[in-house]
Length: 130
Length: 105
Image (tube, rainbow over all chains, first blue to last red; front, side):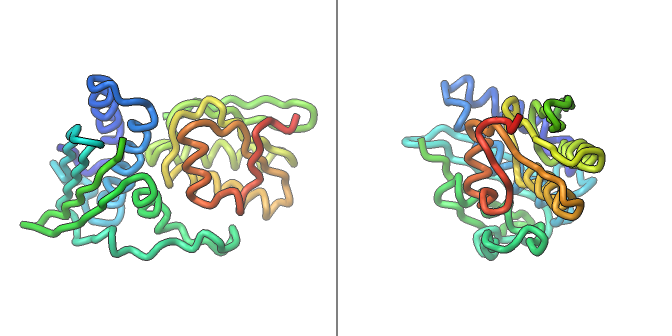
């Protein structure tokens, strides 16, 4: 469980590191898990109304056949990252909007990204192939 | 959390960044890079010891690049490795930033 505070990223990163170390997964896997989970968690804190909320999000990692199954759920406003528009990566520096990039990164490093809204929770499941 | 060093080398201000450029550290990163850009006409960000970057860290680098553009300062991002390099590539940053393997000085 993570509280709605960006400083929780330290705890998240530490648990990803121990998950990967205990299962002999490399730094590249840990990197991608950190990236996808940070983007979704921080999105819920900054834009989903989770800031300051206790037990705002929960994360589950499981080593499965061929990859790592990842689940992150948060109690923020409904947000479907699979429906978010892709950022325009060709726009000039000065014109580029801030948003969209994080979700783009999630989609690039993860496979089978799925979203469901159940019982007041946003639930995203995805897979990091090995 | 990031650690930042700054040194001058043959006309360039080299900003060395070590650690994790995540959402928590992004403001510190932007502050360090912009601070250097305000004081120097040529700034190289040395990311050789940077272990991790997320979109928040990328945005900090983009903001710094924008500040450099406004001041007509040179700004180069150098020594990208591993996952950090991959994140710059899949974000299309090579179209927007001067990215090079080695420091320019």
